[in-house]
Image (cartoon, rainbow, N blue to C red; front, side):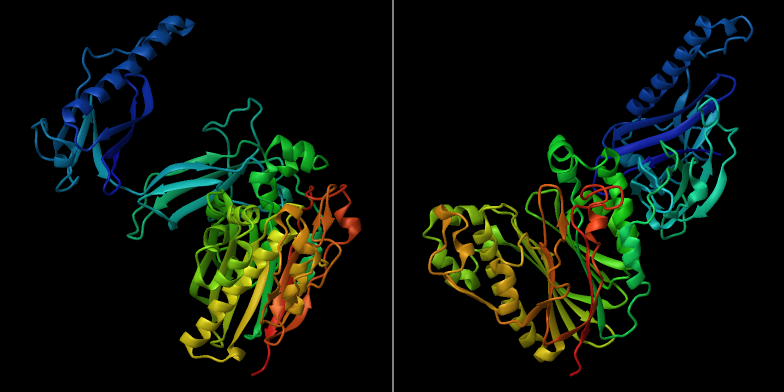
Length: 573
């Protein structure tokens, strides 16, 4: 039996009507889509459906008359009037004079739509695919999955997905005669060298938790699978992280600035920031394949990421990092931000805190002493309060041991003349972290031996600056040079202290950021050294690797930063 699909999302007026009408006699085979309103009378919608079907028949007739084939093939006989009507099963009475809301109020069961000599079963809110799209770049040896997948009345976990491959026919048209070879099942496919030159097809049947499956939708890649980069430096780093850590007291931490597409997609990025990077290698559809493979190969427990595009978090990372739970924190109204991914089997999220520094440093009581020391410099106060810099602070409990980890993640202000701003930002941040740390100890009734602080991020600060000094030496004096990185905004009579004994897990490598305009150590994994032991830090890429294509990003490096990876372990109580 033919089917017509009605879709009306809860608490909305829109009603979407979709069906495929195929009639050999009338030489018509076409899908129709209508968007009506629930408050509309069905009579008006039936008239629109009839007009559209008749319009298609008229177009077909005109095309036949213009073609040479008109002499050889008889024209379809078009009825004077196409019958379009609603009926209930077992009834010959047309349904007229009611709204769609009234029509569907009780049930769609037994409701029929008749078009000419075809009867359609009306199905309401069946599992449905609104849209599906594959990425423009598919590399052999990497993962491929839908770039976009919008489901209605369905979920990924209850849907069925299958991958097929085929070489494009000589005529360039994928029709029903093309033989597609089945490759795999599931939404994520691991491509291989044998896929090079093949186009991929993804066929999805949407499903819901009741086990109901909707109509299948297929999508064919726009380009064939391409040869992927080999011997990427991150694959050598994977040799240090072949397996997840098995010790319940050990934690593998990754910190990584992914280079948001927001900053890589544009003329300024292509011509000024990264002119040495091949254009295709700068596109996010290329880069994300690399950094996702890289992240998966580290077998981490915690991943603190910076410059995460909202669209990459939603459509890529959340689905591919399926062993993790992700928390995304945008930077104000910006389309990128910071994200924490924690391994779900190992941690339980107790609470997540978000601190938008610019919005809060003048209002939160815990910041009052430091704020009062700088607010008189109006230019300084204005500049720091306008920043969208954000601190993400997550309290996690280790399921196996019951101990707690307080994970901080941030991306500080970047400007070259802003050492003083960054130092103040980290000053306010550690005040907030200390406040939450003490609060957790009190509320959870635990000792300091059962909670450890890990502070990750892109601090945009070299080791010689005040941030590293504050984090590792616990103090920055009022005469420190950073306070005068901008004379008009010079910070007077301010010193900073913080109570945590912290070390840098990866030390101070020459480069964590490497471009042809700037190269230095800007990223750190700071850990509380009286709570954790450092088991290992994964060696960073060599200068030779970083400069192989002049600088990064490149065909082998997906970002202008490199990932930091460290294995920590709670000290014995």
